[in-house]
Image 1 (cartoon, rainbow, N blue to C red):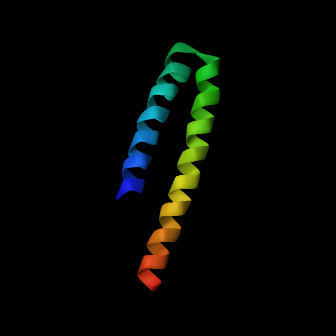
Image 2 (cartoon, rainbow, N blue to C red):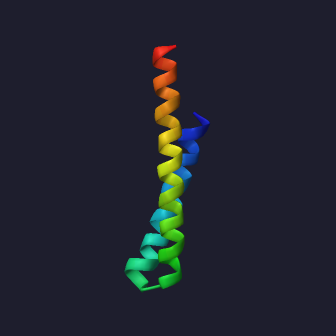
Length: 57
């Protein structure tokens, strides 16, 4: 469950950066948003693999 909590924290961070980027036009927030989204992608993949391994083994 620790991974899910990390995922939720990353989503919250991404939401904040998205608000800054899209709402306020802060270009640096766009870079931070992209970074957060990449981290989300990696963590989501780790969770998928863990679920698959638990299911099969």
